[in-house]
Image (cartoon, rainbow, N blue to C red; front, side):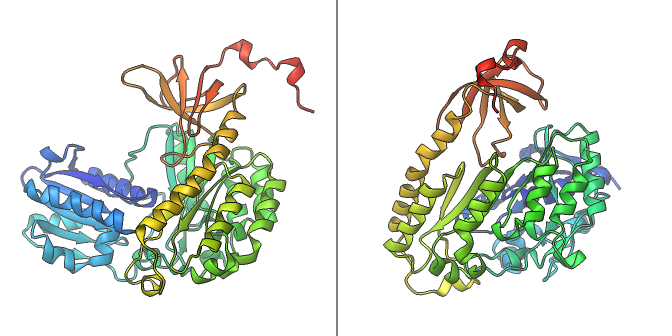
Length: 451
């Protein structure tokens, strides 16, 4: 056989999708393929698509159409491939293959078959696959940070969400497998490991018969990595056991991403999240009491069908009352194949946009206050990039998760991928500013000693 074709990967979607991209790259490199980030030079472009909401699909389709117009051979993978299956092959003659969310591990075989002239559709209807620490992986994030998937899929059926249809039922990896991968990442110099799954607080339920997040965190506490961050913690799963595991495990950051979605019991019921209903205030109080230093991030959906002004006002007051560090707000997107798609009383987009803006506006002074509280402190910052023009370093403190939260702009020099102490001098709504701390900054000022 002659030279192997060159393959580029165009990545869309979430960090769960990114891990799939990284495994595909790892498998292709292992099989001897040239992998190039430049799509123009590549023989094939793998487009790892997102299908979560309308806007994500539109972005995926735009990318596919642009590549088709450039006469690329396209391999469509990821959530849109799972979602629309053969429809995509019908509509995009340039697509040479379609690979489902539970089939990315077959990518080498798919490319080999395509090379013989076959048009391949490899989509398992109910995905069951999950990669483990033995699956090759080629990381695409900055060198200091890596995502680690603890489980795939979801057993909940929230009325607005198509994920279970796209990713299958929950399947967890064993604690041993996750720790082995964490050890490997630590050995590569990773400073921050971000644990992800659809619902991290449900980790282990399918495998062990009960959630094992507390045990997982304790096991990861023995891995030599400074920061372990969790994503997507359902408040009901933050049991006293999990909270004490966070308290007792020094490298587990007290950063909680609570995908609350709403505060009003009627809307939560309509969203098919009744188990969250009445417990919101109590649970958040409990978390804030147990972990006073916790950084709380959450996301809300405004404009769910039937959301009245009163429901929205309840959400607005909820946000003002709890003072979350970070809040993301999405307008409702009706997804075909979900119960919410056909609910009555769908709201016009301009009403949804106005509510989103009002909620964001209520949050801004809170975010600013939280950031301003950092001024005068010396905090560890993971340095991720150098500003091309100013030469200043850019990174994140433990308060900020990649992509979704703010940044720390740092004067002074520091190695990319390293954790350095930074004296914070200034703050705005989203970001912090400071300089690489000197010995003098690290000495405690006598009058500031906290009792």
